[in-house]
Amino acid sequence: MSEYKIGFIGAGNMGSAMMEGILCAGLCEKNEMIASCHSHGTKERVEKKLGIRVTLDNREASSAKIVFLAVKPYQLADVVEDIKGSLKEDTLVISVVAGKTLLQLGQMLGSGMHIVRSMPNTPAMVGAAMSAICTNDLVTEEEKEEAKVLFESFGQAEVVREDLMDVVTGVSGSSPAFIYMVIEAMADAAVAEGMQRKAAYKFAAQTVLGSAKMVLETGKHPGELKDAVTSPGGTTIEGVAALEANGLRATMMAGVRAAVQKSRDMSK
Ligand SMILES: NC(=O)c1ccc[n+]([C@@H]2O[C@H](COP(=O)([O-])OP(=O)(O)OC[C@H]3O[C@@H](n4cnc5c(N)ncnc54)[C@H](OP(=O)(O)O)[C@@H]3O)[C@@H](O)[C@H]2O)c1
Image 1 (cartoon, rainbow, N blue to C red):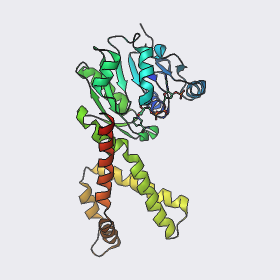
Image 2 (image 1 turned 180 degrees about the horizontal axis):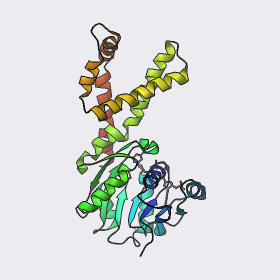
Image 3 (image 1 turned 30 degrees about the vertical axis):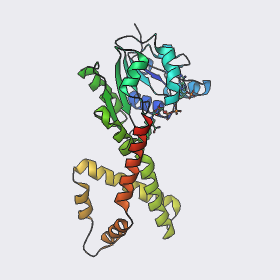
Image 4 (image 1 turned 90 degrees about the horizontal axis):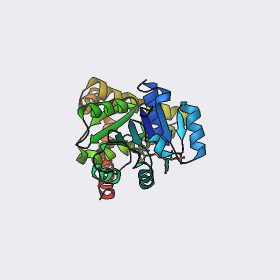
């Protein structure tokens, strides 16, 4: 029987961030986690950073009870070729590979495998991911809960229907990039009005963070929170009017929907 509780195949940006979250939350001891990757450079770097065993042998990593697939979509076929024979029937396989459906994963890995498909996002690197997971019919409620708890170690997680995974790609997978653009634009405006660049990023980013926390922690409707800071004839309503005139909401909706559509097209 394998001594490893969790195995990661792929130890790049996403895999490393997830492993760090899981270890920091104490959901797995260092000696119960193993990862595999492609290069000696990554092996040495991740071994040093996380203090876990890292191997170039995917079969060894796939001996764990829970096996994460955290490689790029085009690398998946090679990985599956390596591990197919060594996965056990009771292994829980958790894929973070964008766009690979439960059906496709099942066809690749073989029928009978318990499979979770997930979509985290890059704020996983600072423990603030928003992740979605969905499962095939073989995954038990206990396994589903176990997977959710693992994802919650580096942020928030929700179980969704698989047909919503493309929507998740738009609203949380791709959207950190949109928010970085918003932060950059806010800071550019502050710089244009005389603020130093470094300070401008701090003011803009902390405001986005704080506003997001207000939505999540008060549970209030975003419109209600917006109304609460717009005094009659004040500065904020002046800014709101300018944003409306320039199509902020329609632009944000178009961005998210374009990403959703691209995700749908890519999984055809
Ligand atoms: N980044 C995001 O925003 C995001 C969000 C949601 C989902 N995802 C998904 O997460 C997955 C990983 O993305 P990433 O950004 O972490 O990619 P990444 O940084 O390029 O990491 C990929 C990892 O896979 C390893 N690898 C490549 N070929 C391999 C092989 N044949 N056997 C074993 N390991 C192999 C690489 O090893 P070396 O380092 O040694 O080359 C690397 O550690 C992707 O499928 C992506 O769609 C990413």
